Length: 420
Ligand SMILES: [Zn+2]
Image 1 (cartoon, rainbow, N blue to C red):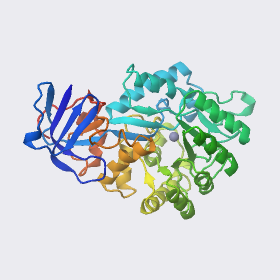
Image 2: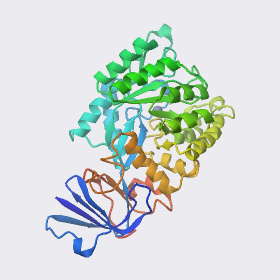
Image 3: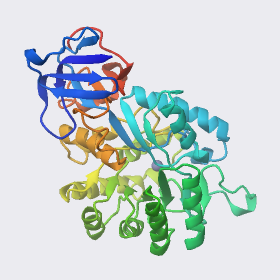
């Protein structure tokens, strides 16, 4: 089966300017041609299905670089652990995976999964049982005693078995990483810093030592997996960078020296910036109080975030959108809002922001030779956009304007109505 997408405006994800009147030719799951096509080269085989895109824009399938498919749009953070039996978390994940795919996200890098359900979900997606993005599965959170994901009081004797694995010191950390890899994780996620929403570990906290994070990275790299760390404060950001964590999540208060270290080592920064805006906009409706949102809380963080990420951009740090969706104030389905803040707040052009959300995401997922750009030889993961995302990046947020193809097959198709 061959598909010929004709009359496309192609944004190929490489960062190159769009090509008008382009053709994309797909055989099976693979792109065999992308770009201008002379009349002489136009496919004539009778098994070629021709789809006239009427000038619509084609971009590579989007990559969500920080996803929590098992988070069920919870209204209180505690529900991430206590109200999630593994069977339920699995069903929630499958539903969110289908939603993410329909939003144009043909690939996603997990940043932590309750009960480690990502692993089974990834298998079900790869076997074609459920629709969803190509997934890198994450472990449960690896966290120190009293760290960010260890909030149940000791006297309740509840542990944190759904969301987190508590590990202190080199031996326990090695065991936690080995166990996560044994269970199938691609991404080893740890919590080094704190967060405004979790008063027991404020933003400035650092809950692991440099030596402990080095052990985690060493063990993760020895097995060829990706290390990821949640950090916000200056000290935790420094520890993550110095330890060589592959993917640094947030790092809102990273100082210049830390940012230079991230740049020099070629680490990836995933800001997750939309999350902060979502809490400020919607959090009060869900009981998030002014002492968390107020001037010395999230409003300060958001001011700092804009400054930090602009400096990171100037240093050429690779950054990927990925917005921590899965909370009532920041629900699944709004993923492309995190691409919008790359433009509105960090100062990327829309074309650069699309590159961050495609090619850079593929690099983070260590699949740059298979996904991330629309070019011959790559998997046919792409999104047809009814509109011009270079003029208005928010068009990517409207699923009714998107037709999504994964592996050469349309999974959603909104091409009715002729030319845009
Ligand atoms: Zn997260």
